[in-house]
Length: 188
Ligand SMILES: [Zn+2]
Image (cartoon, rainbow, N blue to C red; front, side):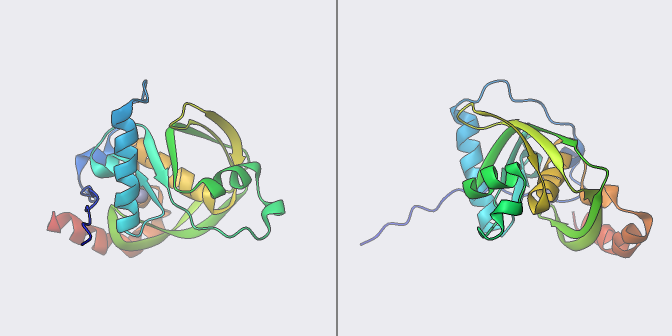
């Protein structure tokens, strides 16, 4: 006989919830509760089929993000140092991540968000960013990231600053999704 211990999954906060628009606090001490929370966030992200999750999305206003970006090892030589280092580490937990764009070149791609269900829009972002962050073992990272990793990092770090992707869209893109956003708010 096999007993399945069901892993804990957290409720994902939805667009309109005030916690999603709050500036988060830095984590001063990576203790067992942070490690346990990160683990539960990974389970929650996987269960929801997401590629990233930030702590405010599960109601915790702290500077913690999870990434679960699928990748293949092709063309790794052309990738940024950040992609080479971090993609093989997925699912990745980052504490107190901070980003600085390292280029004026932008790229545009469709994004979605577990907190803004079933809505997608084109978001313009810098192509490369310098990431500084801590890992759960206290290891400090300072590395340039490009590609989808740079986009995902910017999306998740926006969450830590209380920003959701509909709030940084160009007007034309926002107009397209406005009716759907209203529906989500009504449902709440
Ligand atoms: Zn999101």
